[in-house]
Length: 151
Image 1: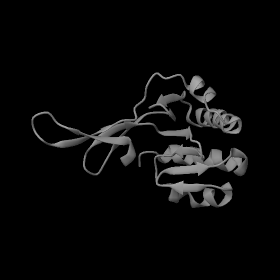
Image 2: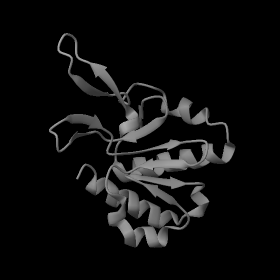
Image 3: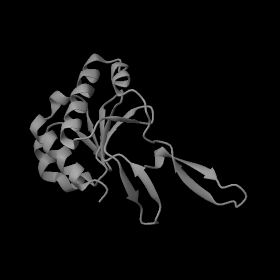
Image 4: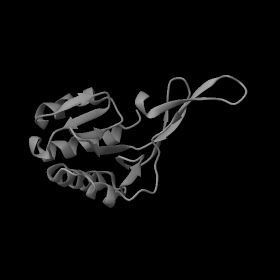
C-alpha cells in the first residue's frame, strides 16, 4: 500500500504521518469502465465488476480515480494505525486487470494452481485477460479472499 500513501507534515509538531490517497468517492463506476480504451480490457472489466458484485453482495464504488471496490472495512496495522479500505476490488490497468484481494494471496495455493495464467503481488492478482483463467476458480478465489479480507 506504500504507493497509495503520501507523507504529510503535521502542523507545528514536525511529526510525519501517512494519509491514504485512495479513498472511496462518488465517482461514476459505469463512466469509468466505459473510459477503458482497449475493448477487450473494458469487456473484461465489466465482467469482473459483475462477478465481484455478485460475490460480495456490495455495489461497486470508485476508490480514487481508477479502482473499483466492493465493501469497506477498517484495516489496523501492527503499529496501531487504522485506515478504511475496500474488502475486494480491481482496476483495469493498461497491462493487466489488477485484482486487489487485500489478503495474503499465497494462502490460496490450491485455487491458484487451477486458475490459469496470472501473476501475483502482495495481495494482488494480475490477469492479462479473463479468458486466460477458469471463471469458476476465479469466483472461488474472490469469495475466499473476501472471507479472509483484512486478516
